[in-house]
Image 1 (cartoon, helix red, strand yellow):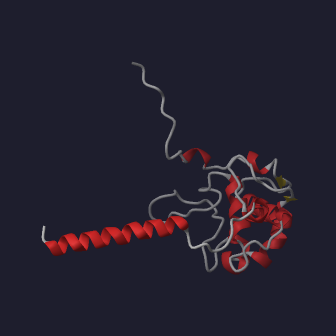
Image 2 (spheres, helix red, strand yellow):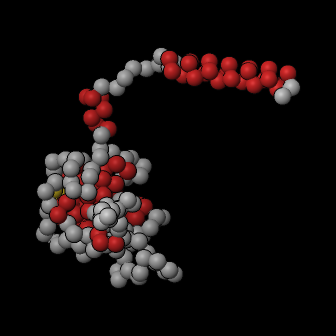
Image 3 (tube, helix red, strand yellow):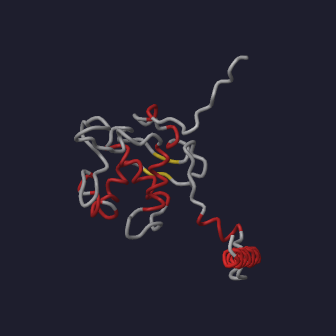
Length: 182
């Protein structure tokens, strides 16, 4: 190896080591976040309903909210607008030409619908809906996809119990393995 290459290698190593040391010390900006400050942002809802907030809603309440908060993008009765629809009458298979993914034929867990609406909708103003409004819109979408009835009330107890039509077509990324016999 030439002397120049050795000098360049030593300089690069020195620069790397000083960068690592500086990074370990940190830039001393900001302060650690407290649990109280983090709590409003911890919106995680698990498939079993863990994390669902208090509140409730019915399909009729959601039907009344949908035109105000959702129809501008998802169209009248959630049939599609500037974005895909959320309901499909007699949806075709989930793959191949003409496939349509809707709440009724694709989503495996009902709590995911609540979670997504609460975090991200309406698109232009996420996090503005109350828990009752999110439960109502979730109930409405489940109802128009023929997953729940007209009079069903969705809340933290009933929503996780909803059996989605496509629930058995999703598999864990790492399924539990059965131990092999020696």
